[in-house]
Image (cartoon, rainbow over all chains, first blue to last red):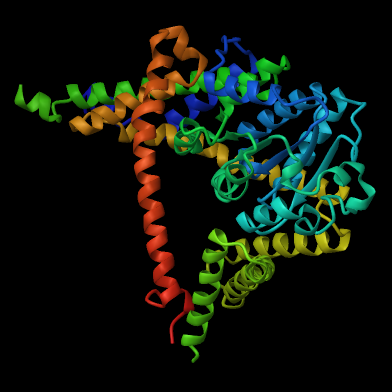
Length: 280
Length: 206
């Protein structure tokens, strides 16, 4: 077997080992590559920045534990941005793990904003079943649709913020952290297009291509794209976190994969088996 | 009537929901709200159906001592453990329930998904070969996107992020629009077929 034949048949364990080594090394010794803010992330940031102080916004955590690396950093950054501007947040979820995701973010954010009180500045209504139907019901009567109880079992009557949030009409902005269905299309169908509420999303990288038409049509006012977008939002709020730390590792992992792709193609072209070589 | 009943019910509820989207009257709104409530109840019951089905499959596997029965024990213990513990603690936001979830489900889900990085690396190496013109275009677009979406792309050349942005803004958006329109038209056609009873797969076999 010639060298070029071997080049297009590298043992997958070699690829796994190199991938592990590259990611681990860069996570242990970060390089600090400069992160450029993309226009889509800037649009989301600017749209939220325009909301008047004291307004109530709705956050939707429609993702599970597997999407934490991409979406939780973005969620924390958006919550930091909102609290820094004096906004109040009501957070809910159409996915059954969403309530826990919101709780994870709140536990972390509280340390930076000790003056923000649960029930006054922030409420986690948690997961409620229903998807698009749930959204339609919240748009008319939130307390009935959300069963009058938050994620922790507290009644809405005990939470002052919920006395001001009776439906989506009381929210000045909606920000969704989404990885699939139910997701952004349900919000656009049932809520944001009808009530004309500004709507931005943070999506996993695989979901970004299908959301681009929504951004171009104006149905989304901003789009935070995957972990890269989360890192950009972290830079915008001035608090680098896990997404920023992960960008170095992601960069070098991509370079490694591209290196193997080039090696495989050189092996294919120079091994004598490709049609280009056979014609020559 | 056993087959016609569900079809008729589906047709009536479907028509009411569609009409109530375009016309608002007191009667229609009341009926629609009631249908929505029943939808929410049914959606919650779907989880129960899933629980019963999984239990049936895995208890059967255990009783017949099929290969992989040990995995069935793990699944049943975890599934019923979470359900019973959640019911005992009373809410998803309970501290102990959250601790159990954050220390087990979170890291395990992250672990399983992080394996994708290795599988995709290996798959990309084997799949992206310049065998045809189309494969070459795919390979080029993939390389540009992989580099353009991470900081190292701009270090290599400032044109790479611009090209990645162009691919997302133009070819991707055009293609996704077409796919979304086609899928939506197909969904409308399927929904109409279900409502008039032509499509009956959801009713099960006789």
